[in-house]
Length: 69
Image (cartoon, rainbow, N blue to C red; front, side, top):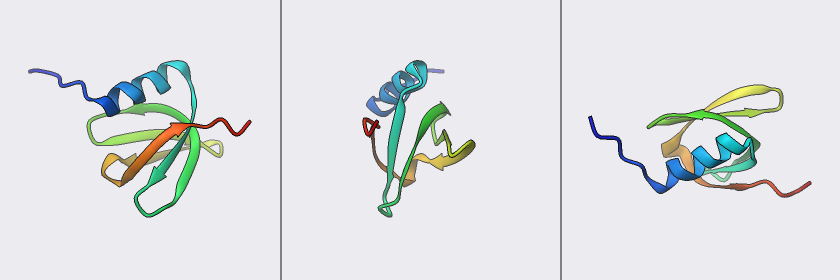
């Protein structure tokens, strides 16, 4: 089985490894700030507000580093 490494997974992998605070923008305009705990080919687990959130990748518009602090 061949594993494809795309840009999204590279960013998510870096955010996860560095425990970077990220902002995830959803396609409906909602945004969630937190730390990427894990991800797979279709979902992202984001720890935010002291609990994990499972987000489907197809619902993500953009994610970036949270530099608000």
